[in-house]
Image (cartoon, rainbow, N blue to C red; front, side, top):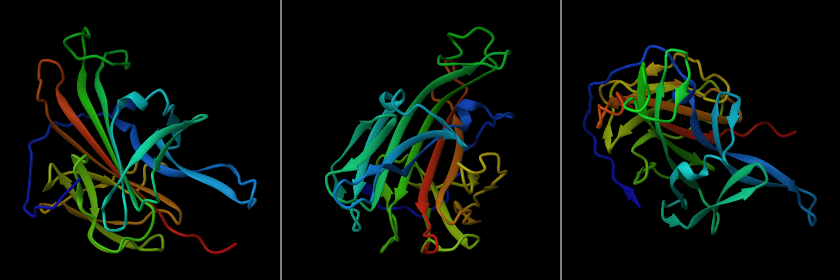
Length: 257
């Protein structure tokens, strides 16, 4: 199910946390992985793997499968395609019943609180003594398997979403204009970073009043753009804020070998 974009500015008062944490830094994205060699063609078998990570440091996706609240696949006209998760050794694969052009994923990462010793605990500040920081983390992912033939819509399971406003450049270093949406509205002040796997510490830039920003495509290969937004808590006694993190992943082709 998809929703049509609503084009008007949207700004929410936010409370920021000064220091990044392992909990905050974790993003989720989808990337192609090798699964083995075909016994008939001798070619490499590949699949789309759900990845939880902070830069190049990845976490166990099987352990986190229970946190996934939604998956979906779509064809080139953004018609839904049934999709499912499958475990393949250490990988968690997202597979459609037929070829997909876009995949989406939503995760409720839970409530976390940080104590003075720097450790994060999977509980609210009402349960953790001397909690210095506390937040509810939500993570979302959109993966593009190829060039888009029409404007990317807003998907129902993506509370926060990065939408390209034109064709994705096929060469690294070229500019890409995007708009970040939150609950269907353009989001001002979201932090946008160019690539999670290769540089999670990039200072990034903030989206403008219309929710847009222009960022250079980082890699001639896998790119995982990240948008982060901290919203006021809906349960202030339990956690101080809600962090929403979205990724948009796509692959630029490399030169023939």
